[in-house]
Length: 350
Image 1 (tube, rainbow, N blue to C red):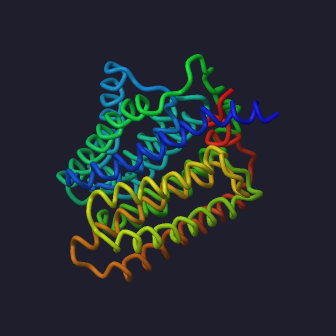
Image 2 (image 1 turned 90 degrees about the vertical axis):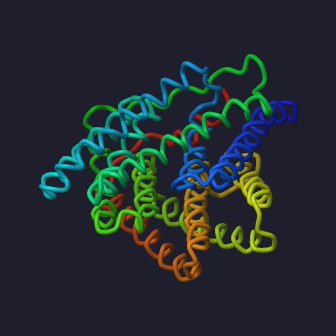
């Protein structure tokens, strides 16, 4: 029994190290290079490092960049409609979000589905103010993805999986009717945050990212336990972001940002990959880590801009909790069964 446990923990330990190191590298690189919206790269790393258990070839990485450019450009194409015909624009974005979520639920590429949702929300909101602002968001996404694609093979080289390890089974595909209903619920979760972001895209960009994350999370949750997953992960993210902020304040430099991100990442990754016992699912900790990075990254930017970090954090945390509460309400009112979370199954080796 102990031999089986150690054999299982060996690849999982490497994956936990790879995830923590990858997120830390992306965090340090994005802030060190002063990328636009620097918390995008580490937030993307949380999802892409768990979605991609194998390193990408140069050709595949270039293809992914091209696909992301095309998918995010969808939001750019909708900005003139949103600017001149707001009602029709919001309906068009809502329909496009529904199709993007349903595409992922029907067995489509999870990365493409993720970037379709991001492009339709973040870029459309930015483009409603100015076309140049939408281009800045596209630039931030592409540069952030490029940082992740550089970190991915490096971390796989540092912490490779054992040879011959079989790939994790693909998550089950939902039937057409059920996929449509779950996609509708996810769309309704994202739309209010999009409407809020249209008033001030830069100020509400973190809220938009959080709502998109909740929309994806809702696709893998049943109504029972949804409040614990959505609200609990948001609260834990806030607590961890506060602890991280005060720890970073002991000595503020890029090396300490990397080391603290690595330490917090290891603690969370051990629970994502079930190396440490937890009452919560791997998906819970995955969303906790992503939300913590968004909160922390925006607080660092607030500090650089000379804003009141504590007040801004309190307001942002209140908005995050409001979005999570609304998502729980939608999850309860539109209660349909959903597939098991990919973060619960796909992360585990066969």
